[in-house]
Amino acid sequence: MRRDDDSWDLASHVGATATLVAAGRARATNSAERLIEDRFAEPLVRAVGIEFLIRWATGELSASDVDEPEAAWGLQRMTTELVARTRYFDQFFADATATGIRQAVILASGLDARGYRLPWPPGMTVYEIDQPYVLRFKAETLAQLGAEPTAHLRMVPADLRHDWPVALLRGGFEPALPTAWIAEGLFGYLPPEAQDRLLDNVTDLSAPASRMAVETFVGASDLDSGRVEEIIRSATRTWRDHGFHLDIWALNYSGARSEVSDYLDNHGWRSVGTTAAQLLADHDLPAMPGNYVAPFDKPSYYTSVLAT
Ligand SMILES: C[S@@+](CC[C@H](N)C(=O)[O-])C[C@H]1O[C@@H](n2cnc3c(N)ncnc32)[C@H](O)[C@@H]1O
Image 1: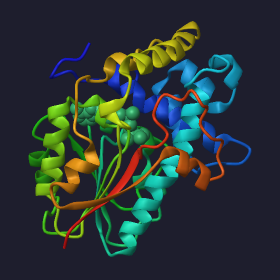
Image 2 (image 1 turned 90 degrees about the horizontal axis):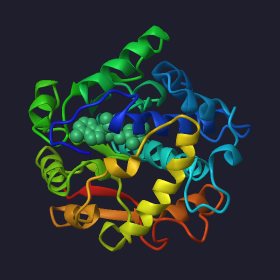
Image 3 (image 1 turned 180 degrees about the horizontal axis):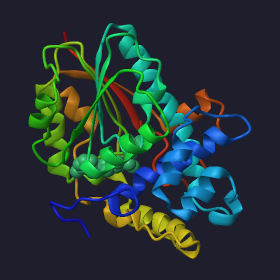
Image 4 (image 1 turned 60 degrees about the vertical axis):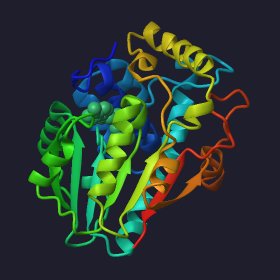
């Protein structure tokens, strides 16, 4: 399913996962409680044009239309987690800029609209790295909507499995400045060795006091991958009945991989982790079901700081 040089738009393959999570953010934004505020998510999902995801984003489909009752994972569960995850990374940037950091890099930015919706401080530069088509589509769609970036926003089209630092440096990135990096919903789509290489590159490009927030492939080393595969395949079967064919399991690279926080800590960073369960509780969101896909006790979100 994966090739070393595969590429994509936002309607298929790995790119469709960006539209999938944007649909979750749109739905959470449209909810009666306005669980998050991402007003760009719905127009972006509409522009991509996957009917099933538009109907999820707008609330036209209900959870019972798309999720198996009692399933360990599904669109509603994903949407709830996205609320916690969005708030986690938004808070990370608020904390990082409060320490004086004025340079950020969003790795695998997809349809993330933080460059347009966060209240960045004056003098902030935000770099986004993703596949060329993904970045172009988002920038053009948001420009058509009249959206203005809230920071100096620089797009860096590159493949994160390959030599992206060259493109980032060419784009104006200043390695002497402390940087706030995020990797949200990325690592499963990188081969294990490319994940290590990416963390090496981030470390090499980071001045002291840089920060990084990541969502990890929780407990990657002790997940029962056969069980996770079955859970995800069974959830996506229901999506197929609605005309959305995305085999998200097949998009992941398998094989043993480093635990991101251990890897960073061995390279001069200090990481503090939070479990998804804790994050849900902190935000008064529904707890995960007992049969959930990942171990509860392992952190899935980390914030790391590079020693000064
Ligand atoms: C699940 S989406 C997450 C997008 C975004 N971080 C968010 O949370 O909305 C995964 C993203 O990773 C990007 N991606 C995956 N592998 C990549 C690679 N090798 N090079 C560049 N981007 C990649 C995809 O294009 C996609 O936008």
